[in-house]
Image: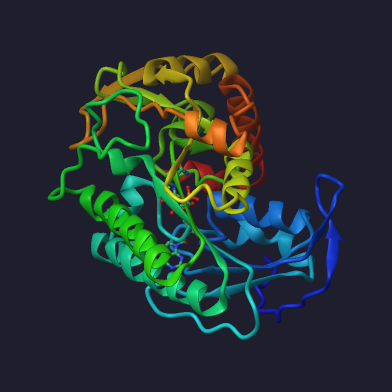
Length: 347
Ligand SMILES: NC(=O)c1ccc[n+]([C@@H]2O[C@H](COP(=O)([O-])OP(=O)(O)OC[C@H]3O[C@@H](n4cnc5c(N)ncnc54)[C@H](O)[C@@H]3O)[C@@H](O)[C@H]2O)c1
């Protein structure tokens, strides 16, 4: 595997972006850029012609996710844990904070570090945004709504979160991070944009990630039982990664009228059983469903109200679940062919 390299940043005046429009070339830091969402975001920003620095501790990120990007001289990778301050020379236009393991089994492996990542990591990156005059994007989460008693969830809902449980390191950490974002915007006039991201899936998720879409697809491809936690009647809404990345970029570039968190996710709701049936149909697997006990504090319903994103960003998802699952299945199938171990060793 090609070595991850640290390359200096370069700035030039302008470039042609995806839209074909000329736009100013930015220097951008993506913390957590080697992860699932971060690597798609880095690619999108490079495609727009920007200089991108990815900082990641590789806890759940993989060099394979960004390997192709390292052939672009405008891309560099720094191995760094955001719980410590990061020193970077030169100007920065945008900072995206995606650093934090998102899957429950992963963030629960070291819950204290997860809390530090959410709080100290966000604080360090906000300080950097203030010092460099950079715009700041915070990847918050639908988990700030906990096990919601209001459905669907709009941004005005304060949530129903357990502050003392196995998910608290993440849920409360992300809530604290939002509070820090608020205070940096108020105190230091940092341009801060917070997205509450709902369940997103797609290529480059880890095979052993523990999130439901990758779990089901990998189990189906391996011909193993598809594990459903609870009755399978709990619902989730699933957003394909390309839609989500589009929303993130629109949000950070939004005007001064967008000052509070915005839900980003797909409002179409499916039961977990429906998702399993779709995966079985698409993969043609002989796998059967295996019912397991629901984990502690697992939310029973989740669906974003995305009216605010529609109105303020002119954003809504366009990729249907069937199409997204097809693309994600193709990705995991190719991984299985290339590296059978990578998939067969998954939990
Ligand atoms: N994917 C989703 O459905 C979803 C939903 C809600 C919120 N989010 C948020 O989006 C962000 C990205 O999620 P993802 O799905 O890509 O998860 P991921 O686990 O694939 O990516 C997280 C990345 O952050 C890195 N990281 C973790 N702790 C770090 C630290 N202390 N210092 C530096 N790097 C660190 C990991 O190595 C990884 O590359 C996370 O902040 C997550 O909370 C994701």
